[in-house]
Image (cartoon, rainbow, N blue to C red; front, side):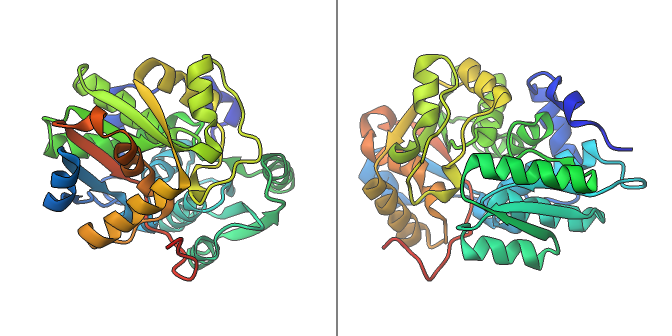
Length: 324
């Protein structure tokens, strides 16, 4: 049996209980990732930063958490058809790897300009790929065709109850290790990670500030947050290829109700933040993961003297196309 997509969309916004249930569900499959810090970065910013390293997660990004939780809750693996999604990279790889681990067939729709490293990852995990034009309309149309042809179940990259709950488990782990955080900040694209982060963080500590970082060239979440309604992304341009998508209804509601501020950042600051992480933490992160640190670099006054948690969302970077 497969739970219908329509039924999924009627589910409410996840709660802390749902996120804790997700943590229990995915514990046999996902890593508990480390939290790193740097005295050099702290001294430069006048703050204490704690980096939650989801670049060390399976499939190289936090997306594995949500993908695994969704499959465990939405698919009866004793009588299941294929699952599908559309993604430029990290969700595609995460769903492919999670599906392989659970013995589920997976078909992924990817734009033709998706990063090579992410395309190769999906192939390595054994999923089939359907390429399409690099537009949201083309991605959705091609996904619809896959569903019509195969009866596949759509596992939406972010506008999904179980995806949001799964992504929130990263901040659950972070706050368990660092309960005295004043601020927590995550990147925002479709909003799955920021939604889960905000729900978990505010439920555990209502006084904590929750911020989202977003590229100026793809600032639809910032504009939507300001306007109080979803403003879709149109022709976004940024090196942070994981943050190109627009908010969904579920993620927008969670963000409006729980996030304090969304901070747009320049491309040059994203590159500077990425270099800083590589240089001082000695780890590989992709541009999207550097966006929260870029927001801190551009707004030091918001973070001075604060204990701040940062979700480093992934490390799937094409080493032949580094921006520095």
